Image (cartoon, rainbow, N blue to C red; front, top):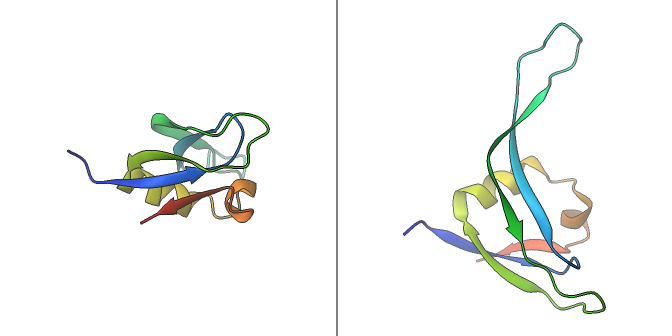
Length: 84
């Protein structure tokens, strides 16, 4: 069984997490991004609730997603976070 971590979310209806990789410069001065792997759906509470809902997520996936998204509004507001 894969090593997992608990991700807590209080965003109504949850959040879909997706990893990405930066690609080479295509001559436009921008580095396009490509989604990699399957997205992970994090469950959230029903509307009107401020409770956190826990979803078990692959530890490596969660670590990489939080590394790639430190400025995501849900991360900054602590509406989604990993629990040890």
